[in-house]
Length: 464
Image (cartoon, rainbow, N blue to C red; front, side):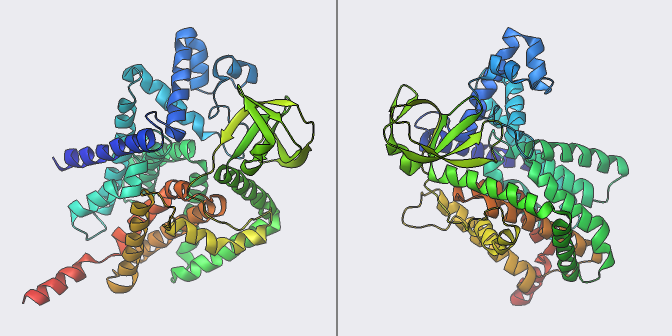
């Protein structure tokens, strides 16, 4: 009965998500990534009626020929996202929703039910491990693992987060719980596959966490010292092998992409191989009509390869009167976060670390221009900070050495996620979504480290 009631509350999060992105942001139509994923999944689903064989080629990724893709999916932007450093995880979301169309008949609420349930199952499975380790009241622990606001909100959507949450929860239990080899193996394999499919950068952070937990942390009694040495050796290895510069290049360009998203702008077709990107403030240099932008006065722009999002070069457009087909128009976001530019510099990236962590765990910080939706996220962040203080300074639980290693490993994982999100994301509305894996790790640490028995003893003394 408890699980049924909890899922009803979880589904209420799904309805709230649907309301926010349909009426608050969408003017009556599902918008943002959720709307685009649903729309493009319908386009992919409709391929089945035209050619079942071609549909299954898309479903299993058997044909990436541009001509084949454009035959059916020419009007998509998430599927045709160009080549990336990491795999196109958007395609997996579109595939899942395309399959759900076979039973939903286009009713979007059915998609929300299935994906919300997926993340709910992940939280319940993780609870089965934590109830053996934590002395929090079982019902409170179960609520914590399934209904923590940001995790429940984004885990009740039809985008990447629900199946990523399911995968991450399965994976973490498979690694840390004392289970039989078979029960461990399927969780690690399925959980790892789901995490990689829907958030590839999370699996990279998990790999670093596993390296620390399974190998490195065993050699140190003091885990804080293990983290310092591990971090120092990791930075040295990146610099020594030359991967530091490559890492800074990828992170820097991802940061620039998000700055373009934050500031808004115009993407127009330049030639067969390039887009031109124009800053939002420079849109006045063009006139617009029927999906075409006509240059009215010279303007500075960037051109980028259509199949490579991470490479752009400055260019000056001076052919007044020339018209360009519009690929995409972005408005300025209402939740800007100022960040220090990395500019392909690894050492600048490291110097940005404190700023990145601050933004990841404290944004959004409300101001006079804030939307009402930012306040619940800000309050949640304050509660998480309070939980950390209570767990480590006021009511800390003494842990066995293995549990210390688990806690520090999860903290390392959360730190890596926070750095990546903070380095690349100058939009608080996106930060609260991308930081979800770190929030899951933070909630687990609280469940392991907080000593509820100390509170019970204190209450008993007061009563006596």
